[in-house]
Amino acid sequence: MSNQPKWAWWVVGIVIPVVGIIVSIQLASKSDSGAKSDAGSQSQSASSGASATGGSGVGSASGGSESKAATPPAADQPAKVFAGPLKITLTEDSSYVDLDNSKPFPGPSDKGADVTTGFMLPTQDLYPPKSGNVMAVSSPDGPEPTKADCLSLIQKNGTYTSGKLTSGTRLCLQTDEGRIAYLRLTAVPTRKALMFEATVWE
Image 1: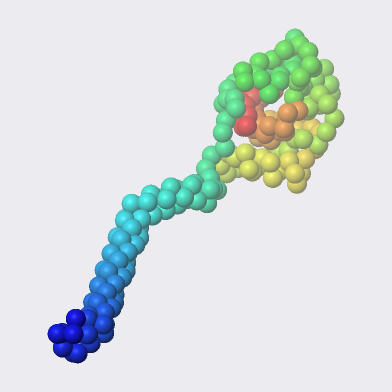
Image 2: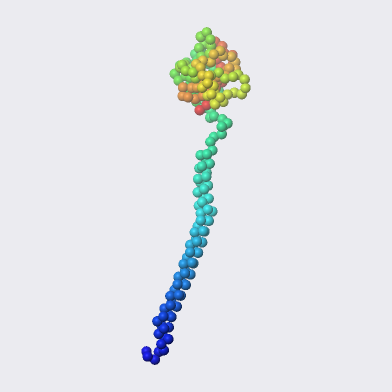
């Protein structure tokens, strides 16, 4: 021990530990920067992957549902037809018709009937068996009324009878179940028969 020079103790006691500490700090800083760069690249790739795959998938899925919800039916889209157009002939023996039936046909009973006529009355007209302002006369000129046209006419000019009937008379009617119907006389009414064409909308 006494043969070793004094500077050797400085090397062993101070220089070597200091060098070791410096090397340790440099290694630690390199590993931290490497981990941060790896994490940064992983997060960047994950975000780019999400935007390319998951993000677009979610976006397209939610976008699809939003587009469906935000797309109302077109205003000029025709209303769904429940029955007709079909020709109906009322006679003395079958003077009632239920327009809420998917296949309306004349019958002798007023049960469920939406419209009828009185062949023996002084003025022959069409009217609902139950009282109510659910009928309106449409203009004989111009295009045939739509469901929306008929509904508007009934709301504004609803009455309980058609008034005088002639060939070509056009009528709008609201049924007992709330459907809207359009009736157009196809022949001059007589004391034996009254013929019209009917279309009923949902």
